[in-house]
Image 1 (tube, rainbow, N blue to C red):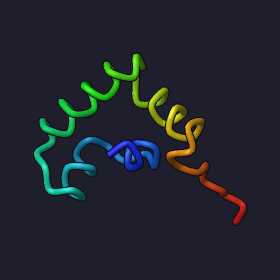
Image 2 (cartoon, rainbow, N blue to C red):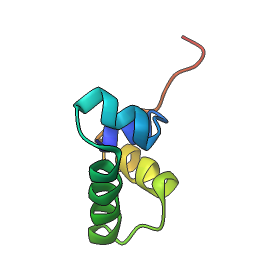
Image 3 (cartoon, rainbow, N blue to C red):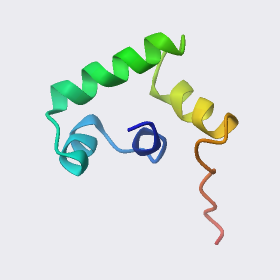
Image 4 (cartoon, rainbow, N blue to C red):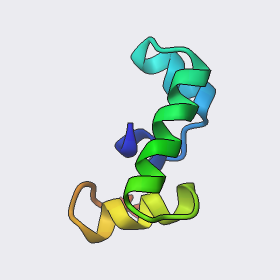
Length: 61
């Protein structure tokens, strides 16, 4: 789910992709943000890149 947030997907798009309800995605993301002491999706995406969980998108490729 963190990877999908980092790729810019909305809660609805994530829910459709992983077959969960939008509310479940929202609740899970809220829990992740709380546990990592992050404020929002943007900070989560930055955290994912800084920790090596995902690579930045190379738009020039």
